[in-house]
Amino acid sequence: MSAEVVALVVLVLVFLIATVRSINMGALALVAAFVVGTAVFGVEVSDVLGGFPANLFVILVGVTYLFALARNNGTVDWIVHRAVVAVRGRVALMPWVMFVVCAAITAIGAASPAAVAIVAPVAMGFAARYRINPVMMGLMVVQGATGGSFSPIGIFGAITNGVVDKSHLPGNPAVLFFSAMGACALISLVGFLTLGGTKLLQRDRETPKQQVATLARAGAATGSAGDSAADPADDALPRLDAQRSLTLVGLLVLAVGALVFDLDIGFLALAVAVVLTLIFPSAARGTVDKISWGTVLLVGGIVTYVSLLEDQGTVKWLGDGVAHVGAPLVAAFLICLIGAVVSAFASTTGILGALIPLAVPFLQTGQVGAVGLVTALAISSSVVDCSPFSTNGALVVANADVSERDNVFKRLMTWGMTIMVVAPVLCWVILVVPGSLS
Image 1 (spheres, rainbow, N blue to C red):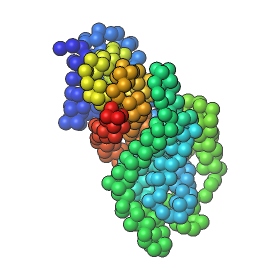
Image 2: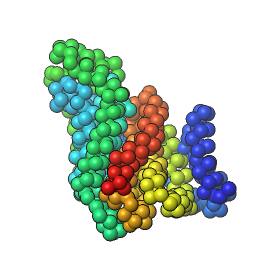
Image 3: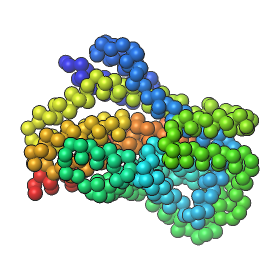
């Protein structure tokens, strides 16, 4: 049995053992990375640790620390109440508002994790307050960020179109963007309808008086700092004191710094949190404990193991195996499937740049349409970002209510694994097969 096969079998065992036994999957993956790295691949421990996602660690810690402060001092309450007023109490609109906001932010060039890091804490806070399924809210936030990223000036769009041009393949940025956005919107619609959206619509059809009472009860039931049961239809909202005002300024600095000046979202969030802690130390008590350390360990361990596989050529080994498949259509499907599987645990940006060149030999035969296959591969490799092992999915889990965090992780993992299988199949049928028959 080759080293590549052993490494893949161990990865499957990590998932099975962590599912059957009550053990943090990340801790198990770190041990597996050490054993497989040193015993199977023969690398040094430092090489194994080189795959630890330090940037993701800082993002998760910084963002969850900052928004723990914002929840403690009531700033998130104020934002959530204002959001309810903005949509006139129609709670069912809020998941779609978050989808559109994330799509707009990434469509103008912001990094997808930066958009999710800024929007997800507010969105998940809103979900907790008004009894919206947190999995549905998180799914729509991530899919909005993903779809917008494929605009001609979005990061995913620029990478994909750039690789296509460099490989001298025919491309169509408009088809790529609208196909990706359509796929993300469809996944969001399915999630909305199956995860409680119809109940939200029913709630919004209540009379205004009943609606206000329902929202007020929801706020009181979830509990929060400050004026949590304030009526969203009147002016009895949490007031902006000095602490909340300065926190809002800090969040604005975070948004502008990350989205406009492309500063590191993790370190910037930590810097804002540290400044707020120095100014208002009493409000910072217990916030470090609210950092999602379990999520950090889980995601860090899995990503470290997958990075080891990438560094040791296991992903390339899979790609080379696909290259020897005689049927172009079958090879095209396998490439899309590999893109989806690897991207669910690793960088979508890296996968887009690495796997498209693998398709060049098949595209040059003329038996598979270039635009269709590239679009199918791009969609398959990106819509799985709702997986809790990707940066975006991890941010959703980390910002979920503590009582819901385990459930959100499990449900997002189910959604991510389902999309990982279904997306390549549908993309292949809709985008690849027709091009080979024309």
